[in-house]
Image 1 (cartoon, rainbow, N blue to C red):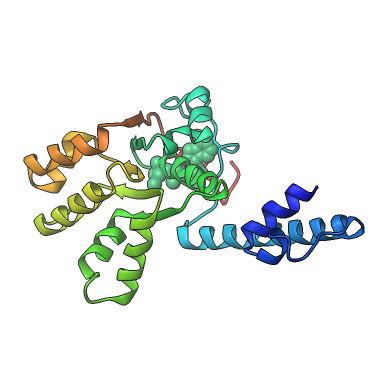
Image 2: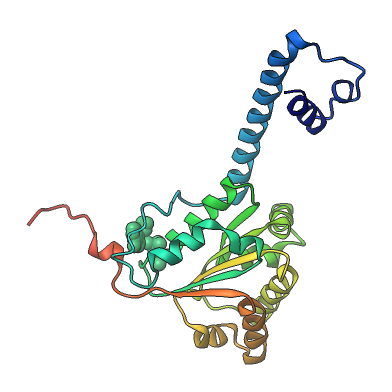
Length: 240
Ligand code: ADP
Ligand code: MG
């Protein structure tokens, strides 16, 4: 029990407790340990809440609610491997490609949620918003702050690459960010376009090749197929 007390005291920098200044008497051990453990739990709870706040997830999604019978582009086995998050420690990226409504954002959010709960720093942003942040970082404190968090992250999730066109300057900003994060953090990207479409979107084949080179160096690519889950499961006002 003493070593647990000492470990926690060190963690909280309570030097008098672990350097012997304040002897830990037998009859107080249990109480002291409970006190320190309660504080540890409380701190962990607070830091999780903060990580979830900073992540800016637009919705809560988890792996359990993802139906792999419906979505054939990802197997149950692949889902389990994604959920284990070993790939985050190995600094792999993940690219989810497929038509709208097929569950790409769902998986990206499930990954993000799990990662934040496991202690990783996560940032979620639409491609659109990310470009906005990059473009306004020098004139907006808000953008600067957000970019600071993004650069500190273990995992950056970029949702919906390919819906809106990107200018040459924007593509360059984006490339610079990806280069900076390369081999420091994992990147998850969802896109309705395949890689050929990315080149067209970025308007520069050389830049697109360099970008894909970095992103796919260590990367899992999942192709989402079939019909839209939204359409297949749409709720109707009238029962027929
Ligand atoms: P995408 O990002 O590919 O356009 P979403 O992930 O936003 O699609 O999915 C649309 C909606 O359908 C979301 O509410 C999502 O949770 C749900 N959904 C999609 N695919 C599945 C699935 N295979 N199992 C359970 N829910 C799904
Ligand atoms: Mg989506």
